[in-house]
Length: 366
Image 1 (spheres, rainbow, N blue to C red):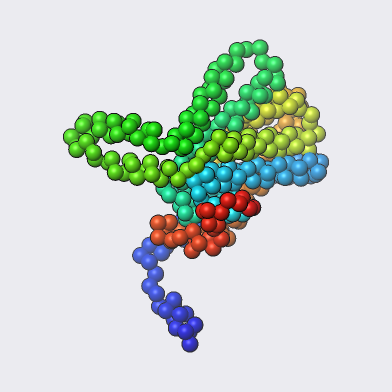
Image 2 (image 1 turned 90 degrees about the horizontal axis):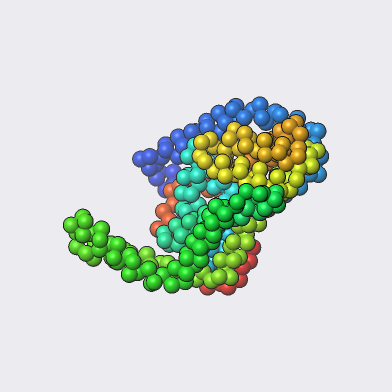
């Protein structure tokens, strides 16, 4: 009887005013994906022909390396969130990153959509707005430092005769930023005086009372105090960041071997770092055409023939972009499509995921 009553109540519940927005967004997403498939259809056909003549064991190794690279993203997130007392299961974190990666690499304005999506997921898991924002910033800085380290390593392996001091200083600056961030996270009150003086100056210019916004500033510092980012934790997160790039370089190397090429490790690493740096510019979703234009000449300069370099590029992009993005979209539609109506500030993590672990749990179970 109660079941029938519940069903009738659910059927009679009026739809929201903007119930159609979700379906419009889904339609736009499907349309954009269809257009992108048409745009890259020639590349897909060439990649498929390359795969037919490629060494499938190396293609399988490239796929495993791409999956390992995605695994490291989740580990970085879990490590940083755990330092703030937010413990998330491995599968949930990885699912969020697969879905976020699909948004980032296939949709116009993808990086913004992806960051918003991951931020929202972290809020649903119980992270405060300050902690969720801090995790995104720290993760990004770790990724940039890791890529710079890979590029610097490749340059040194090439035996570059030119002065690499600019790259060394850049890397040193990022490392200093990491140390500063760790210090601030360990003791947020050390920047309280700076914030008070900045607020006082801004309020003076705007003609407002000197203590305007002071309560909000100190509330943010209190949220940041929940972060316990030790040097060991920072080292663990940074290790996963470097592993992410190493796994992706391995994916490219395996794609080159699958195409029958034998590139030098140093040349391949520099080509990869250059392609990733250019691909981060949001000109086209997934760095379409931009990454290819940089990667192929880089592979040729590493010792591959032009035909083998093109085949390696197509295999690499098919595995690391299309294959991983396809997984992400499947994950998104099955796990996250219905979460748009959930308010992160109103729902507890248990209500949303049903599997969040208590923040006091010291274990790191996958």
